[in-house]
Amino acid sequence: MGAELVTLQRQYFNTGAPTELKHRKKALQTLRKILTIDVNEILDAVEADLRRQKGVTHALEIANAIVEIDYYLEHLDEWAAPTYVEKTLTTALDTPMIVKESKGVVLLIGPWNYPASMILLPLIPIIAAGNTVIIKPSEVAENTAKVFDRLFTKYFEKRYLSVVLGGVPETTELLKERFDHIMYTGCTPVAKIIMTAAAKNLTPVTLELGGKCPVVVEDDAPADIAAKRIAWGKWLNCGQTCLAPDYIITTPSMKSKLIVALKSALTEFYGTDIQKSKDYSRIINTRHFDRINSLLEKTKAPILFKGGEVDRNDLFIPPIILDAHRSDIFMEDEIFGPILPILTVKDLDEAISVIRSGEKPLAAYYFTKNSGKIDKFLNETSSGGVTINDVLMHITVDTLPFGGIGHSGMGRYRGKFGFETFSHEKGVLKRGYFGESLARFVFKNENF
Image (cartoon, rainbow, N blue to C red):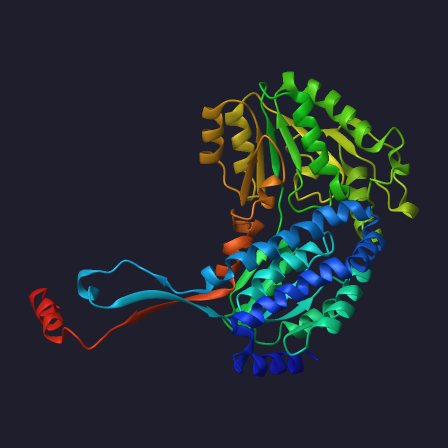
């Protein structure tokens, strides 16, 4: 199946049709049509997979994709046009430029935690750059995967855009094929498998992974505002967000205020009986539930807050805040769940030391009013992105790149950065026949 699809799409790509600007725009407009006319099917599927409210999913996964499509349609002519670069002495009579070339057949592998947007947001630049694409949605979000298969089969030809359903065996077979680019969103161990497969064909990859995203809260930050923003970002989607705050680092004096404010924010968001709240999502499946629950059974950290009792039958794990130490089991790997450890440090230098002792995260967050400390934080920590005095929000800005560094990923997309990622920027020098004797004179006198 994989080999046939790749061959079919490569043949179609070689006709030149997908690279035509009118073809790209039509594909983007068709995708926008799906997200307006058929949006309820997608929302129903995500709700079935994650128990997430439809309104929340529309805001988090659909609305931003529509905005991105409109942004691309507005700028595509400009981005696709050749970029003329500065001339040198030896090219004064010539035309040096960068030509944006479509790459070919792209493999897009999506995750289960945001099963719509993490397909849609990379898909937009892939087709806008003039490529064909084979999509492998996560089998864990089975309902959403099936809806995408049905809708994309309805609106697009398989030789241009197609979906492959299935799990590890199907993905393994796909990775045996030669692609011109692979885009993967998920975890680091799987990313290593994908890179290994890609290396056999020298295929470039874009990897959007995760990591332990830290939140540093200074004494001068307003505790109530910081807590509300952290709580929103942490327990959104039951903590199953690659950009979610993974742990807090703060001082002893701020910690007590922050705990009170976090409890207040959780009550405001989810009520006093969180399990009954329609706004609180569930763990995706029993395997991930058991993983998180096993860590809860092993941790030595005192519980500062627990918003209910775990319920395996309901896949419910409540918000839990821990008074953790750097050696705690929850500090070893990305939690990807509703558990929030709080580490206590004496100052910013120690906080930075904690962050730098681990792998580089996908994002880092810092709450303070001190501009000098902000500069220090930005200069002395490394992460895929940063939001100051909030969490997650940098991903919403089309004019900023989104991507990781080190174990949190490589490459970038969103806005123009995505167009550049899925295009090949070809250096071109266009020469005329005038000035032959002048050119020879310049070369002679420069001792070339």
